[in-house]
Length: 203
Image 1 (cartoon, rainbow, N blue to C red):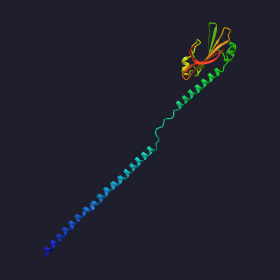
Image 2: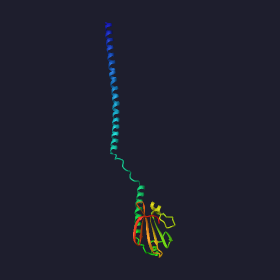
Image 3: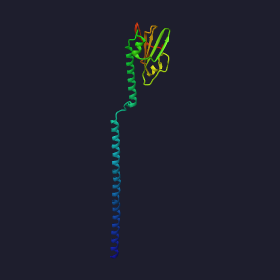
Image 4: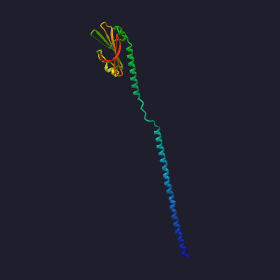
């Protein structure tokens, strides 16, 4: 009886031990699978956030208007305004000079009306007076002879020049206004016969 009992006890022990060893892997597998799934789940929100961020960026890009022409800087706007103002002032000066009526006036009458000439010259019984109208503050045409300031007119430093010619009786015989029109120096010449405007050359 003792031997049989010992055999049954041994069989039961083997079965019990075998059953425990079979259950243990099942218990261990569960947390391993769970932890793996947990890692994947924690990664998915990061991937979603990245998608949302890239989505936001594409929305921002779509909302962005196409590159527009940059607005002129304050400095450029000021220089353009100054150029426009200078041109208008030059036109005003020329218009005022064209309204003059000087033919047959005496030297004294011209002096009272226009002041002292900047430059004077005599020759061949005629006297010439020159009046400068600078386009830039402080600009001065340095030439001491009666002459046209071609460079000054071209650059806008000179708005206009008035040349008056007196005859032997010291009366105005003719006068000319030199000014710039669309990049070309023009001369508006007035005589007893009337006025004419044409491309000018230095007298």
